[in-house]
Amino acid sequence: MNINSSIGIFDSGLGGLSVLKQFIRFLPYESYVYLGDTARVPYGNKSVEIVGRYAEECTEFLIKKDVKLIVVACNTVSSNALDNVTRVAKDIPVIGMIRPGSLAAYRTSQSKRIGIIGTRATINSKSYEIELKNLADNQDINIYSKACPLFVPLVEEGMLNNDATKQIAHFYLDEFKSKNIDTLILACTHYPLLANVIKEILPYVNLIDSGEHSSVSALRLLAERKLLKEEKNIFIERPDIKFFVTDLPQNFHIQARSFLGFDVDSPELIDL
Amino acid sequence: MNINSSIGIFDSGLGGLSVLKQFIRFLPYESYVYLGDTARVPYGNKSVEIVGRYAEECTEFLIKKDVKLIVVACNTVSSNALDNVTRVAKDIPVIGMIRPGSLAAYRTSQSKRIGIIGTRATINSKSYEIELKNLADNQDINIYSKACPLFVPLVEEGMLNNDATKQIAHFYLDEFKSKNIDTLILACTHYPLLANVIKEILPYVNLIDSGEHSSVSALRLLAERKLLKEEKNIFIERPDIKFFVTDLPQNFHIQARSFLGFDVDSPELIDL
Image (cartoon, rainbow over all chains, first blue to last red; front, side, top):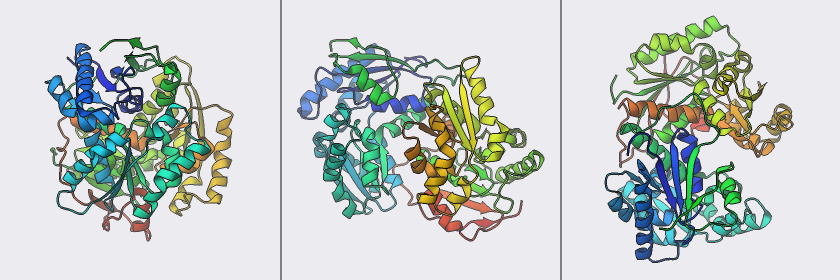
C-alpha cells in the first residue's frame, strides 16, 4: 500500500454508501473501493460468530485490493467484530463507526444527555453506550437508546419524506422529547437519509452522523501518516469509486443514487 | 509557534463564531484565540485599502498570541485582503473562506450550476466566482450570485425562524428556483444560522458552509505539518477559547450562544 492506494469501505449492503458519501465530501481526491456484501445482508440478526467470519472475509477482499485504509461502514460489524477486522488487517489502519460517532456525540453534548438510535443488533450490543461511558469516565452521563427497525426498510423503499415515515418516526422518537436529550447518534448507515424527518420531531437536538466523523478521523489519520493524496485543482467529473457486491440488487442504481446523490457505474459481482 | 500553540481566528465582528463552531466540531482538542474587531464592524462597506489595513492589524495581534494557524473567518477580508494577511503572517499558514468554499461547491455540484449568496461587498468582489471559474478551467459552469443584505441584521436580531425572515428569504432566493442550481454557497459567516429557512425554499440544493470546509482544510494542513494536538480521551467541559474584541457588544453573550450553541467566558477588550 502507498499514497496512491485506494480507501477500502465495506458494509453488509448498500447502507455504507452514506458513509462513502461523507468520505467523498471531505476526501474527494482519493480513490475508493466499496464492497457491499449484498448476498448475505443484513448482518444485524446473525450471530456474533458469523458476523465475525463475514467481516474477516470482507477485510481479506479489501487487502487484496491493496487499500491504505479499511473503513468498517457497518454499525453491526463495528459493534461486534472490529477486533476481527483489525487482526486480519494487520498493519493496514482500520476505522469503525463507534469511536468517531461516540467522540463527536460526547463533545457536542452540553447536557451529557445523549440519545442513540440504531438497529436492534447495534442497540443490543451496547457498543456506543460503553464507549460513551468510557469517555465520561466517572462523570455524569445519561444515555437513552432505542432500536428503530422500520427505518432501514423505509429508506430502502425510498420513502424518505412521506406521511407514513413521519408517523413511524414519531412512534419511535417522541419519547426522546421528555428525556431532554441535546444530542442524538444516528447509529445506522441508513438513518442520515431520514435526518430531515428526525429534525422535524427533535428540532433542537444535534444529530451525529457517525459516517461524517469517521471520514474526519480518516483524514487526520492519513494526513499524519503522509498517506493523503495531494489536493488537485483539476477535477474529474465523478469521484473514482469501484463497486463490488456479492449479489446484484435489482435497484442498485436507484439506491446508489439515493445514498450518494449522483449516478454511479455498475458494480462488479464477486464471491467472498 | 509549536504544536501547543492556539489556532487564531479573526473576523470583523462576531459572525466568525460560526466558523469557530465548525473548527470546534472537527478539532475540539485544539485551543483557540478568537478576535472580533467589533469596534470597526462591519468591514463590508469600507474601501479595500481600509479593509486591508484592518486585516493586517488583526493578523499582527494574532501573531503576538503565537498562533500556529491564522483563519480569516471574514468573507470580506478573504475576498479583498487575503494577500495582506499572508504577507504579514510570513511563515504562519493562513486559511481564508473563498478557496475551501469554492472547492467544496465545485466538487459537490453535479450540474455545475452554482449559486452564491453573501453581503454586497463579497458578491461585488466576485471572489467566489473567479475561484470557481478557475477551478472549472475551460469547462462549462453557470454561476448565479445574489447579495442578501438583510440576512446579517436578521441573524443578529435572533430572528432565525420567524415569518418575516421566511418572507425575506423568499424575496432573495425564489429566483434561484428557475436557475436550476444544485449547490448554493453560503458566502457569509451569518448565513449558516439561516440554513433551515433556506432549505425550506430550496430543498434539493446542497448548501455549502465555507466555514465547515475551511476547518477540514485546516485539519489537513496541520496534520501534514505535524502541528495537530493528540486526540484525548478525557474531555474538558468546554473548548479552550480566548475571546478578544475591540468593543464590547451589549449582547455579546447572547450572540455567542446563538452562533456557538454554548455559553462562553467574557471577552477581553483590546485596542488594535
